Length: 389
Image (cartoon, rainbow, N blue to C red; front, top):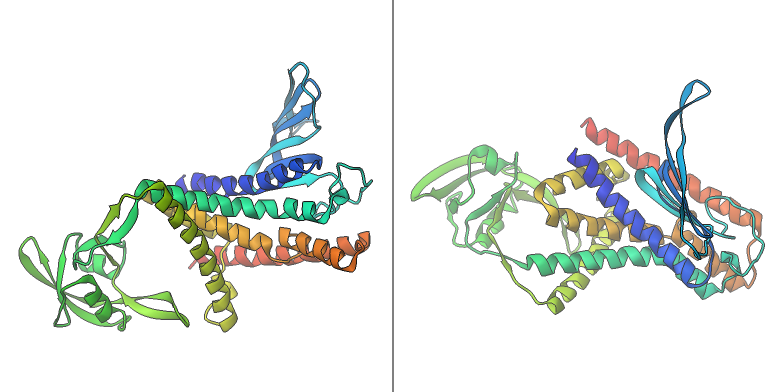
């Protein structure tokens, strides 16, 4: 159950703020929005802005012609005297894993070819206005991540790790926990080498992944000896990645209170560092240190969202901020079908000083959709493979 609601919360909120960015930007420059939809079909609720109020339709399972089908089960109108409707449909779909904003006169993945060049259509706007609309979703995701990082820092404070060689946390099903070490144990020596501070044990363990070690700890005044093998973990380093030895322990942490100004700074740093992690991923893919099999999709996101939700709201919100940056980065790539692809086409048209033909734009969009479909199938295959491994 945690897996389901955590996934819906993370993806649903991030898709909503992304599409809200496009919607608000389009309205800000006078573009008519025909549909604002959150989620994948089938439709669940539809709110249509009409003159003198709202038209509301609810969809669910119903019997039609003797068989069960999905369709409208209730329609009502909320009357608001003097209200001027925009004709926009606001849709809440059943599966909260996507969304889109349909603007009048926009040649996008909906393959709509109706462009009348009316003043309220997307194609009638200037290049800066088009770029503002297309980039607004990405900017909204970046802003969301910044707000989350800032808020987390302000509420939680700055994390400061203790240098005392005392176990503050143990990772489940890792060597230290399996061997019987406990939270609060003070590590005295490893392989006969005395341990005085936390960095001492890091210097000893990191160079010996998957190696047998002898470790002595002090627990409630009694010294205990343990013997087990280290595990390993891949970490980013200056020139790529490195495999280091670990046993699944963490030091004690203290949280220092910060001012809002300091939280603001740490929010900015967290946002920038998140982009750095993405660039490192691409660097690893290019160098062969990582492969396409390492990429994950909605199932992997859901698994991690569920695990972080178990740990509490702070880890879940931190994970949401990271995914928000990933969503922003993915959408700004110059791939047809994504925001970056649309921006790329607009820039090409501004350089050649003439619009691409309708046929050319649709072909580009179709190529982009095929690429995205292949990418989606790849990450879904990876996700399913991980479930069985």
